[in-house]
Image 1: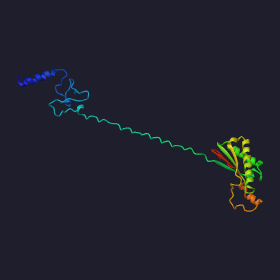
Image 2: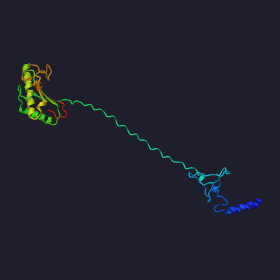
Image 3: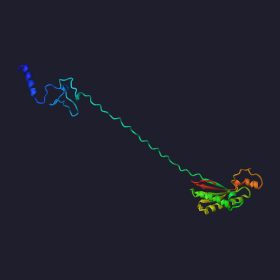
Image 4: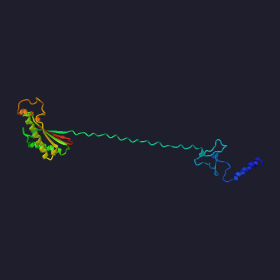
Amino acid sequence: MTINKKLMFAAVAAALLPGVSIAQDVRTEGYLTDTTGRIVMSGTNLCWRHRDMDMPSATGPCEMKAPVAIIPAAAPIIVAAKPAAPVAKVAQKPVPQKISFSGDALFAFDKSMLKPEGRVLLDGLVTQLSGATYDNIQATGHTDRFGSSAYNQKLSERRANAVKDYLASKDVMASRIDAQGKGETQPVTKAGDCKGAKSAKVIACLQPDRRVDIEMTGAKTVTGSL
């Protein structure tokens, strides 16, 4: 059989094969195709080239650039702030509250019986104590320098006890009230302030020394002043 006859026979045979195209589509030239003329691709979208084709001319999906995977930006890492270390609280001892009452306001000169106006002053203290928290109340009596030391000591004690008894009568806990006298040993005036013999002028000058101090130990809430 001559060469021309062989080519003619091959062309006729190809025409008789169903589903086989005589001339491949340019877009699939060089790649393995199925009976419908589509490029055969693997499950991972890979194509197969013919061994005798170094540079396929196909422009189909096999020659398309692989899509670039877009990696989302990493979410910012939020580091929770560490809680501040607890600050140790140091219990502070409350500052004692101290109120000084003029002895002349509470008592007549050289006396230890409370005057009516003196009771009014102590009623104000009772009102304050009703809203206070305290551990102890100290009533301390003082006198001026006139009279003997022994007499002044006794007078200061009587005055302190008179204040204690009155507070207890107003429902202030007597067990928390202490009374003591200091006589003339803790004057407020300075030496030389009230010179001279006993007189109305000198007695008036020494008035700050005649007093009763009320000190509340452990007091937390005390309002007002007397």
